[in-house]
Length: 158
Image (tube, rainbow, N blue to C red):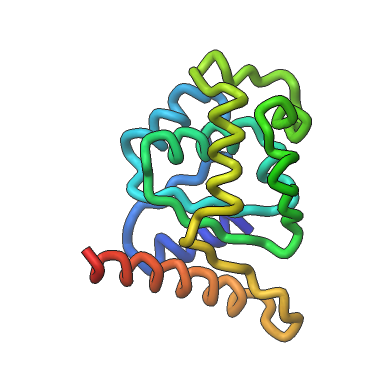
């Protein structure tokens, strides 16, 4: 699904669209792309996103440097209760303990703050249609169109 969204964004905007799963061998490089070469981070929030340490790193960096972010919420996402996102509890979400984000100056406190912001404060949110009558490409066209509308409305407002 993320790959398909990437292709649709590139097709609709004629711009490059970076997909993190293509660059998981070097996290420092991945995080540097978010810091320096990414104009906007689009977070595809599924049931697994918060469990991926590299996603936590990307989200935290974007939050920390005030990067523009759009959250695309998939119906599989179950938003954790706000108290469950405390720094002392955030590690329980990760599917792998092999990643040590603190090596990249990404602490549990920063992750906690970034997750709370992403899930409870961010205004640029698009919801994946859960209506069974919208499937296949039309479903993804709706997501891309809503994201692009959000982005164009922000340009007008500046």
